[in-house]
Image 1 (cartoon, rainbow, N blue to C red):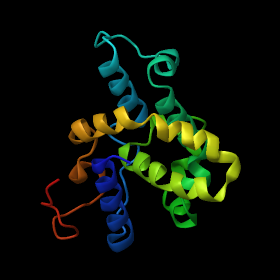
Image 2: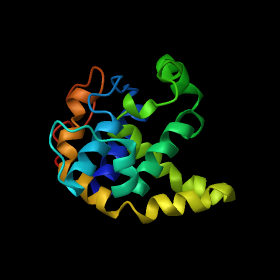
Image 3: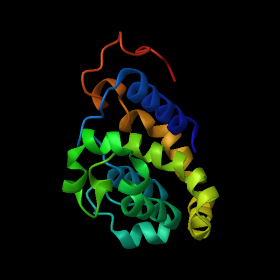
Image 4: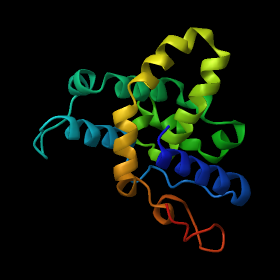
Length: 169
């Protein structure tokens, strides 16, 4: 997990547990857009050129596997009973939640992968594949996280008194 993604996940946990603050949905910058931006940095694509699944498969297969893992397991492993109650829109987002959920949820997913790896032996090969190819993606997140994460804009009703608002990264 990248240093910035770990920090985002820590902030998220504190905001959810200590202050009961929800993430604004759909997210300002969805996971699919983050991945497309990453693939654009790997190869020269026109700014208006559409990044396809085939492009991602060719240039960032581990990142595509991460997105697929997120989409197929998000509801099962990402949320507890309380969050399902808080986010009734989970069912509305259907088969491709990565077009609605953002970097905060990606941080939750990556963090939970270690536990999934240890508990579910059938998942180990796919998780090893994902984790082995995330080095470049982690560097990308560390470099560009400010575009994808703005605490004051990504959470509902966040005030400086509810959290260490001026914390620098």
